[in-house]
Amino acid sequence: MRQTAQVDQSWAGRTLGGRYILEQPQAQGLIATVYTAQDTQLQRRVAVKVLQPAAAGDPQAAAGFAREAQVAARLHHPHLAQVYDAGTAEGRPYIVMEYVDGRPLDVGRRYDVGPAVDLAVQVTSAVAFIQDNGLLHCDVQPANVLVDNQGQVKLVDFGGAVAPEEPGTAPAVPAATLQLPVIPTSPDSLPYLAPERLRGAPPAPPADVYSLGALLYSLLAGQPPYPGATAAAMISAQQAGPPVPVGQHNPAVPPAVEALVARALAPDPAARFASAGDLERALEELRAGSRQATAAFPGAGPSVSGPIQPYVASQPAVAPLPAHAPAGSAIMPRWAIPVIAGIVLLSLLALLAATLGHGQGPAQASSAGGSPTAGAASPTAAAGPPAPQLLGLSLDAARALAQQGGWKLVAAPGVYTDSVAPGLVLAQEPAAGISLAPGSPLTVTTSLGPAAAVPTVAPTPPAGGVVAPPPPPAGGGEPGKGHGKGKGGH
Image (cartoon, rainbow, N blue to C red; front, top):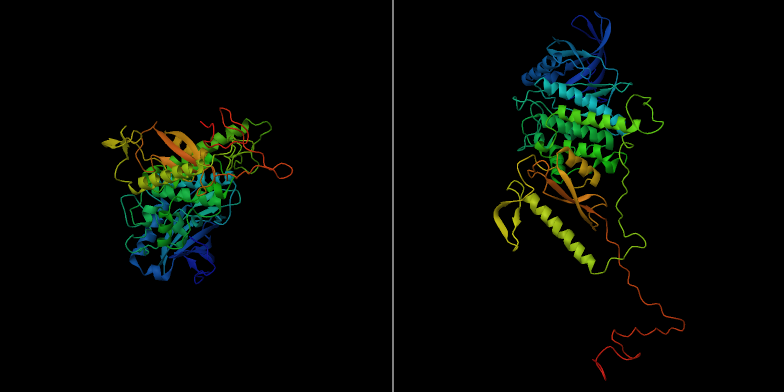
């Protein structure tokens, strides 16, 4: 449910069901308006969600609204808004819910790492509970996450909740038309829909995982992973490649958190966490590790505000790779620049070929004579989960992501390039999406930044402007003689 200034106030002041006195509207979505209200029977404040007139005349929308009430009423969790009652007045269905004294997450605010992870844990816990009860939320987005002054979260709006075996009833964008379905999707939810959902695939647990990853990305970066106000724009942005690593938006994000977010946002559902429960456990492990690391620091005490803070302190300090040769080091020979540039180009071409050939099987190994061996699969490609997408990650983030999948990260020598920022992965082998058995190596190449220019050093003439002659060749020669063959030459 999104906030809007132009809400329907037509039912303010009415009494529904003989007990709920509606106050001012607080939020309005595409098909319903939420009012605060007083329950005169139990003397408590509640929230009442009323279906708008146009939607009330649509049988499918009305049926979906009734399903929302039924779904939410049977789910009881500390981070889910509870449903108390439901009814119909003047042909318009309404749902009476727990009143949450909080505000939606601010999508334009960059949260500190500790509070952001704490908020994500609470939302993920609620989604995991929903999935454990055989349902999918299908609409995790900041507008549906309310936070009170104590930092406690309530996940609301079950309009898209659906069982995995019920495709087509949750918000989706058909690939053929890129138009909204019968149950419309708010433009605010597009940045949080998984790529497969944008293309019309049926909902599944990894789709909720993607939404949770996009939510955590937004909290840490202050913006969603991909830009786009339409489904077509969002699909185009996703097809262009992985999002900017969240650590580039927020340098305080440690590699372990960056790797977790990257895995949750993997374009291939099989490369993500399998369920919200798996993601919740990974987040909890990060929090536990941070607390243990903080306790080891002298003078470290508990957080005053509740949510933990020291995610950066729990990570070892890693010096960035230099973009240029340090002072006093050997200057790179002039011939090495085109050689290195050629290596970079070949690496990028190989990566492009692997990407374009994805789905046709692993790359074939070359024999000692240089010709491919027919039918011989790459030694690193074996039965197992798909390799993660590591391009654009820091080396530490790539290593953390590889360790989560049970693989061993191997760092190849870095190369100079001005197309990838220093310290970030510019190539990997095998490519993302290739099946890789646990324990197999994942080889990555990182950028060293632009190559240092090799200056042309001219000899400094001595006083008087006379340049000293070059030294004689080995083997002896008289000063002043030429280097070519002449009298007495060899």
